[in-house]
Image 1: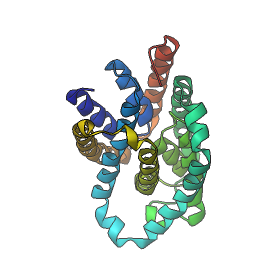
Image 2 (image 1 turned 90 degrees about the vertical axis):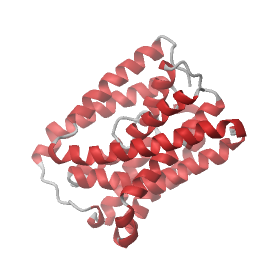
Image 3 (image 1 turned 60 degrees about the vertical axis):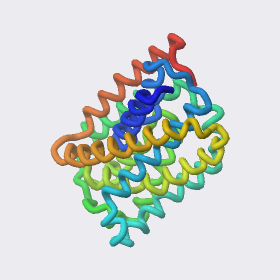
Image 4 (image 1 turned 120 degrees about the vertical axis):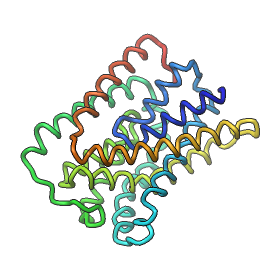
Length: 262
């Protein structure tokens, strides 16, 4: 991997981690277009740079995270299902679900679900929750169950939690904010566990690449989160649904041609 490729992957990670489009799918797709093989270091690199995206959310929501214990309580409740299921199903997911056809299918399915929720479900119901710190604990737990679906590659963690939030009565901005904040404990634990499992693939020569990927992921995630929160003030999620379907079909075509490796 060259330095400029680390920059590109860092930008892709930061821009897609918190948008409902699957950062995993995009990193694999872009790596393929860049001619990068899915070596053990490459996989570890993709995991490590997620920390940059996580810290972007901590930075943007630092004041609220420090002064709002009610919000933390709900985040912890929502994290429980993913924490338990992630630990129990880690080997199964890594062993059987990490293949390009699963990613492509889940990208398309998620896109269809977004369009159906926006065009059929939401017009018939008014949101009842506008503040993430006031999400009922039962709904916080349910959002956590939706998040556990994101263990399936291509689902998108933010996509699953945002859809879950919308179905449970959160408005678009509250659903997006709760999704971002729930990412903090979820991704810290998941990334830390993955790095613990793969740390032997890190070497002194690779730290420069990791540092570059980390920083570019951080700054691009800051931009993406700010833009997304402004976007949902006046737009629905249909464009993301259409985008997911297009990318999923592209992913499927490349996988069928044998151009994508895991």
